[in-house]
Image (tube, rainbow, N blue to C red; front, side, top):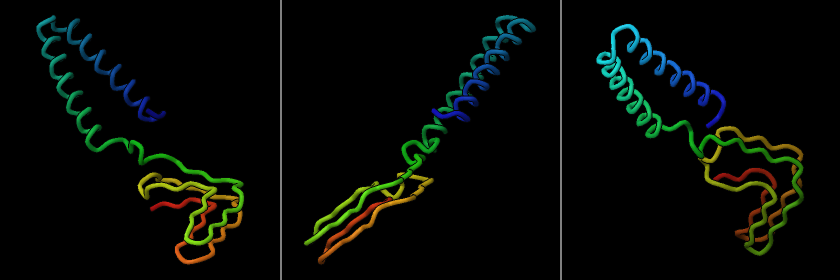
Length: 117
C-alpha cells in the first residue's frame, strides 16, 4: 500500500473508532453496538469495492530504464537490455540514455528500452 492509500486507510479507521466511541459515550452501549455494526458493514462494502476495482495493483507500477548497454539479435533471435512485459504493467514509463539496438535477419528483435506487448 502506498502513501495516499495508507493515509486514507488510517484516517478512515480513526474516524470509525471516534464514531463508535462518541456513540458509546453519548447514547450508551446499545446505540454504540448499532453504530459499530453499520460502520463494519460500510467498511466491508468499501473493502469489497476496493478489491474489485483495485488500487491499480500490479498495473500501477512505474518503469524506468536508464543507461542500458547495446542489444544485438541475429538470425531470428531476441536481445534485450531493457525491460519487457505486459502492456498493462505500467502507467508511467521513462527511458533515458539507452544503448543501441540492432536486429539482423528475419524475425529478429532487439530492445534497449521498454518493450510492452
